[in-house]
Image 1: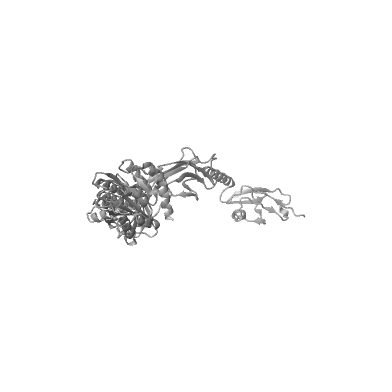
Image 2: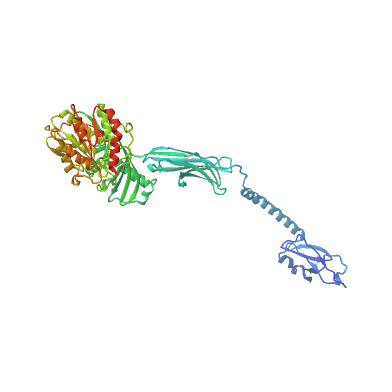
Length: 573
């Protein structure tokens, strides 16, 4: 007999069900996956125990007892009847579907992103842009950006763009908008003159898209302070937090120094000139303080004759006054910061405002004042531009003879006091000395004796009129043999200038010594003082006729100013 094979698919069999094939409900012969089985139903559990949710029993052998018999398929739940098993299966399916509905739908909503059209909006930039050196200021960036984007402050320079570190002060969702957030960041700075001209912009960046949206540019203007100074504070504990100018530690320490500098200037000679002090940064060792001072650099004096003149302070005046004041009040208990420990032998300072006048511009200034019978100080904008400047040694040669008179002698002193008002005086700049003569000559002060306009003016004020004869030749010899000596401050490579102030009526001929000096490269400037000036005498003494001036010859002074300037520059070479 040929083998009859029949495959039956059994659906709906659960894990706890048995399945069997029978020809009537009382039949005990069963055919399973591997062939016929006999016995009670409880022993047949192959399909259920194997965990098949759907099984395929096969008839693969000839069994005569089943030949021609119609086979049926039934399912019987273990420990239950078949109908209850089906109900249980349906109930489980319904519960499973409910659970899927409860948990799967929110997950779909969570992970499916909304469609966001468009990018971030253009941000805004705001803050103070016109500043004084030492001022604290904030720059704020604000804008509506996509959730993948960020907001930065960028500094732009010739070397490229640099993102700056800032503090996030606000970040919030846009109402009813799942695509965007509002961001506000602030950036705190301490103004330094090096920041002048800095260009800033706020920039929105989306790193995923590599896209950028920029605000308008902002340009910061920082006016340099009048004085920059570095102080070394001994026996003062360094704190690493001092490096961060925005840290609370830096701010507290800096404010204490600033308050004490206010105290120092309140006791100083320049209390009326002083405005403010700001600490720019701190360095270790013990603590090095870099600060700037806002103050007026001019001071007005009145001489014994009632003439007023304006003196421009130099850095020696300022530093020496600070040192003197600190030493005077060091133990008074009024200094509460490390400023009391200032190393007074190690103060570095310079005047940062570029408003000093060189020698020739000041000569021009004096003649303008003198010819127009003016007192006080002329603004620098009234003066011609300089072609060059040089290291110069100047000796004023003052005629104190009887023919000059006391009134004209005071005028000469007044000239010197105004002359110092706009000059940079120092070992590597301009040096001034004064020699007075009549029948004899003597040094009032040497080239290297004073480097402060204030002390120079005090020394000039003490010079007394003596009367006597007019020995110009003897006076020129004295300057040549004495004043320009290295021991008296003369510098080998400097431009040497003699400014002779006289009526020109010499007792003897000064031509020989004058020619000797000019042959050595000394520039002699002659200023005719008083009535009856001997112009021929002055022309023979001066470097050339272009270096002879008269108080009433103002037009000639304007015309010859460039000639004098060119001679000084050529002499420098």
